[in-house]
Image 1 (cartoon, rainbow, N blue to C red):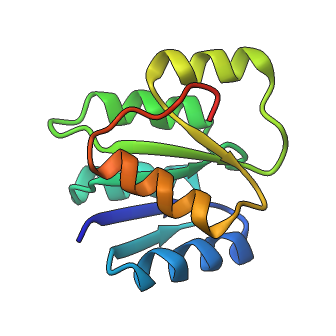
Image 2 (image 1 turned 90 degrees about the horizontal axis):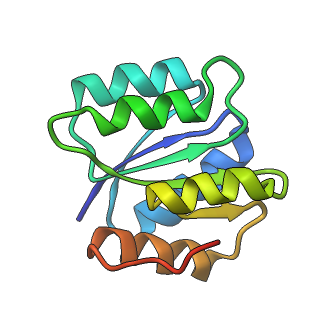
Length: 126
Protein backbone atom coordinates (compact mmCIF):
# COMPACT_ATOMS: atom_id res chain seq x y z
CA UNK A 1 0.00 0.00 0.00
CA UNK A 2 1.05 3.63 0.45
CA UNK A 3 3.73 5.37 2.52
CA UNK A 4 1.99 7.99 4.63
CA UNK A 5 3.34 10.65 6.98
CA UNK A 6 1.05 12.05 9.69
CA UNK A 7 2.14 15.37 11.22
CA UNK A 8 -0.09 16.25 14.16
CA UNK A 9 0.77 17.73 17.53
CA UNK A 10 -2.30 16.18 19.17
CA UNK A 11 -1.20 12.69 20.34
CA UNK A 12 -4.68 11.13 20.55
CA UNK A 13 -5.69 12.31 17.07
CA UNK A 14 -2.37 11.13 15.68
CA UNK A 15 -2.78 7.64 17.18
CA UNK A 16 -6.38 7.27 15.94
CA UNK A 17 -5.37 8.26 12.40
CA UNK A 18 -2.28 6.02 12.48
CA UNK A 19 -4.24 2.96 13.64
CA UNK A 20 -6.94 3.55 11.05
CA UNK A 21 -4.44 3.80 8.18
CA UNK A 22 -2.28 0.89 9.34
CA UNK A 23 -5.41 -1.27 9.56
CA UNK A 24 -5.90 -0.51 5.85
CA UNK A 25 -2.38 -1.78 5.15
CA UNK A 26 -0.53 1.52 4.78
CA UNK A 27 3.00 2.12 6.06
CA UNK A 28 2.63 5.06 8.45
CA UNK A 29 5.25 7.37 9.95
CA UNK A 30 4.36 10.00 12.52
CA UNK A 31 5.78 13.31 13.73
CA UNK A 32 4.45 15.89 16.16
CA UNK A 33 5.90 19.12 14.77
CA UNK A 34 6.07 20.87 11.43
CA UNK A 35 9.87 21.03 11.59
CA UNK A 36 10.08 17.24 11.95
CA UNK A 37 7.61 16.87 9.09
CA UNK A 38 9.93 18.97 6.92
CA UNK A 39 12.91 16.81 7.90
CA UNK A 40 11.06 13.58 7.18
CA UNK A 41 9.88 14.61 3.71
CA UNK A 42 13.45 15.56 2.80
CA UNK A 43 14.66 12.06 3.73
CA UNK A 44 11.75 9.80 2.70
CA UNK A 45 9.43 9.82 -0.30
CA UNK A 46 5.83 9.69 0.90
CA UNK A 47 2.72 9.09 -1.18
CA UNK A 48 0.58 11.13 1.21
CA UNK A 49 1.22 13.65 3.97
CA UNK A 50 -1.54 14.29 6.50
CA UNK A 51 -0.82 17.64 8.07
CA UNK A 52 -2.47 19.40 11.01
CA UNK A 53 -3.27 23.08 10.57
CA UNK A 54 -2.37 23.69 14.22
CA UNK A 55 1.32 22.80 14.23
CA UNK A 56 3.08 24.72 17.02
CA UNK A 57 6.42 25.48 15.41
CA UNK A 58 6.04 25.77 11.63
CA UNK A 59 3.05 27.21 9.79
CA UNK A 60 1.20 24.58 7.77
CA UNK A 61 1.43 26.78 4.65
CA UNK A 62 5.23 26.77 5.00
CA UNK A 63 5.16 22.97 5.05
CA UNK A 64 2.88 22.94 1.99
CA UNK A 65 5.26 25.24 0.11
CA UNK A 66 8.19 22.96 0.97
CA UNK A 67 6.29 19.89 -0.21
CA UNK A 68 5.58 21.50 -3.58
CA UNK A 69 9.27 21.84 -4.44
CA UNK A 70 10.19 18.21 -3.73
CA UNK A 71 11.22 16.12 -6.75
CA UNK A 72 8.22 13.88 -6.06
CA UNK A 73 5.37 15.89 -4.55
CA UNK A 74 3.19 13.83 -2.20
CA UNK A 75 -0.56 14.23 -2.01
CA UNK A 76 -1.64 16.26 1.03
CA UNK A 77 -4.62 16.08 3.37
CA UNK A 78 -5.03 18.84 5.95
CA UNK A 79 -6.75 18.22 9.29
CA UNK A 80 -7.94 20.88 11.69
CA UNK A 81 -9.26 21.02 15.23
CA UNK A 82 -11.35 24.10 14.45
CA UNK A 83 -13.46 25.10 11.50
CA UNK A 84 -11.20 26.48 8.81
CA UNK A 85 -11.73 30.17 7.98
CA UNK A 86 -13.14 30.89 4.53
CA UNK A 87 -9.92 32.48 3.19
CA UNK A 88 -7.91 29.46 4.30
CA UNK A 89 -10.43 27.13 2.68
CA UNK A 90 -10.15 29.11 -0.57
CA UNK A 91 -6.35 28.75 -0.43
CA UNK A 92 -6.57 25.00 0.17
CA UNK A 93 -9.05 24.65 -2.69
CA UNK A 94 -6.75 26.65 -5.00
CA UNK A 95 -3.85 24.36 -4.10
CA UNK A 96 -6.02 21.26 -4.50
CA UNK A 97 -5.61 20.33 -0.83
CA UNK A 98 -8.63 18.77 0.89
CA UNK A 99 -9.17 18.95 4.64
CA UNK A 100 -11.05 17.23 7.42
CA UNK A 101 -12.22 18.79 10.64
CA UNK A 102 -11.59 16.85 13.86
CA UNK A 103 -13.16 14.71 15.10
CA UNK A 104 -13.48 12.96 11.77
CA UNK A 105 -15.51 9.94 10.82
CA UNK A 106 -13.54 6.80 10.01
CA UNK A 107 -15.26 6.43 6.65
CA UNK A 108 -14.46 10.06 5.70
CA UNK A 109 -10.76 9.44 6.33
CA UNK A 110 -10.74 6.20 4.36
CA UNK A 111 -12.66 7.73 1.45
CA UNK A 112 -10.46 10.82 1.17
CA UNK A 113 -7.24 8.82 1.48
CA UNK A 114 -8.44 6.43 -1.21
CA UNK A 115 -9.42 9.31 -3.54
CA UNK A 116 -6.09 11.06 -3.04
CA UNK A 117 -3.96 7.96 -3.51
CA UNK A 118 -5.92 6.95 -6.61
CA UNK A 119 -5.31 10.42 -8.09
CA UNK A 120 -8.99 11.26 -8.29
CA UNK A 121 -10.29 14.74 -7.62
CA UNK A 122 -11.72 15.65 -4.25
CA UNK A 123 -14.76 17.94 -3.99
CA UNK A 124 -13.86 21.53 -3.05
CA UNK A 125 -14.39 22.58 0.53
CA UNK A 126 -13.74 19.08 1.72
